[in-house]
Image (tube, rainbow, N blue to C red; front, side, top):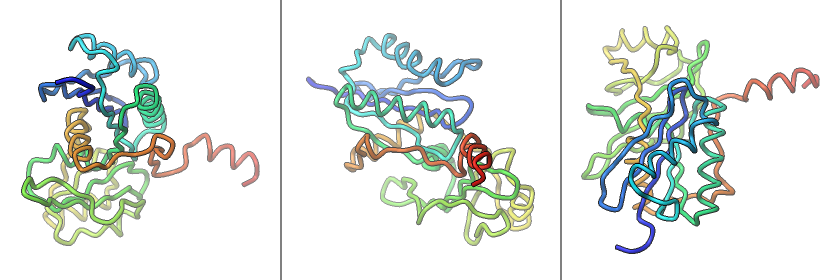
Length: 230
């Protein structure tokens, strides 16, 4: 089969990230970022390593999916800048993948679920997801938002996916309601799977319009505003 056929996915929303590729034969492959490496030091190198291992060249790339957050400021910024640069230079499609969908993709069990990201103090970025269609794929209901932990709606929820920073008030509410709290998984292969579905649905994004989804202003911006008296 001629022409670019390879799908590349970048998941670097958290401290440990990685990239994944779906090759021309529909097989999935993954390359993790170095455990001690910064995203800006190892992301392009990880892509190079994976392509070299699979004997691919950049021009084989049909589309690039990238996890868009919420997540860490540096990881998201580097991942999205890299995805945009590659899409523009290679003429590849760009697919924005909400990080909540990446997390949900690794969920083994029924829905509905809530994915709680970027927990800090008593606030979380909460996204409600349900399964739909014959394939029971995860879809976002409404929009994720930064919410007080005490106000997150838990009615009818089968599980909440939240990490060790999840506010204790929300963890307690889940326990009292008999709702399982599950550690989220940020998998490059999950990002690849979601990106493939979104691409098949024609849900691509103009590189000029793609931006990270931050749950809060980055610390550097807050400090600048304070110094300026804002």
